[in-house]
Length: 169
Image (tube, rainbow, N blue to C red; front, side, top):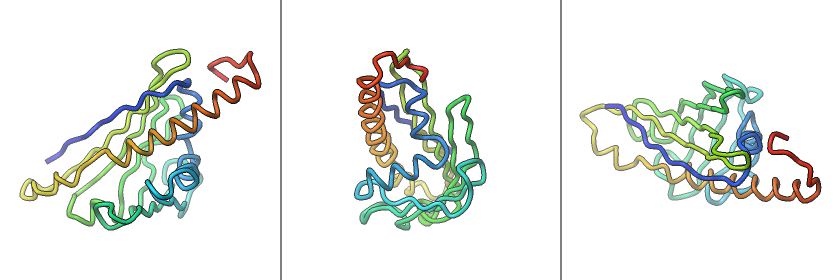
């Protein structure tokens, strides 16, 4: 069976500012710097942040699955502000899921507002419906809120220093 779980986090900053935190390798850096105790530590194994980049994320104790996940970037679209990863090892795959992908989209909702749309796409054998209980967007939501707070704080600080800063800068 296939399915998806989605959650959105509102951000009081332009989509361009939020995307700067999500694009390339910046998200891995920020997760490790800002949320090591709630999300984990990200380590880039290979790549420059584009398609094909391989990242290892080690989760805090108590996280469902193998305690880590290796993901490869399958989509990195600056125009659409979309990043997609596919789990290649660990995480929920270790529990028996056939595939797991994460899609992160930054959606413009106004001149100075946006939303982080985080989607977990999964595939699991029909004979293993008990695995669905492990699915959650909790980590994605915590990550989105942490990054949103960081972006809003930095964006507001930049606006104070440069009152003429436009939302597209």
